[in-house]
Amino acid sequence: MNLTKELFEHYKKNWLLGDYYFITLEKGPMKSFNPDFTVLVIPPNDKREMWTYATIGMSNTVSDPIEIHLFSAKENDDLAEILTAIAYYKLTGNNVDLNDSVNFGRPWLPNSKCEYGLISLPYLDGLELEKFRVDNTAISFYWLIPITKQESDYRWKYGIEKLEEYFDNENFNYLNPFRRSVV
Image (cartoon, rainbow, N blue to C red; front, side, top):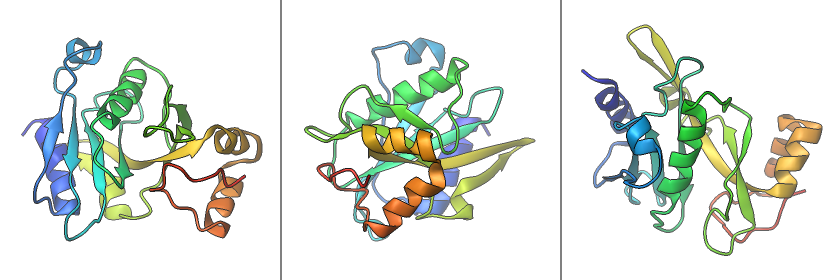
């Protein structure tokens, strides 16, 4: 079984897929760099009342293989471009891993102040999703949480634990693209 199929089966096992589709960007460098890379899109269903966008093929790397996903209250297939850009960045040898923040280069969703993403543990799904083995390779599945520049700066200055304390204390709504910064 190839890696793409294994990754899809892992998502299927964890998210009990009903309807879904894939987005593969035809423009940009990813198509020629990793033609198997795609983004799985899962509409709201019985298990989740939100849209889910998940990478398939980001783990085709020599070190620290990961896959990432993000959630959205509304369908917006432009999110596949954000995930593809982050995957390309990682696959071309740049470090992208747990607790890092990444600059989206634009708002997460139109008019949002969240222009960064925090690579976090998949708190909504737990270890069942997070840890996966294919042959002799351990792949980690992480949650990409949209955050503001202020939150990203705070994370780098004071650490991930302090930022997560703010998230917990402020009733952080990870689905609200118009939320204010918690710091």
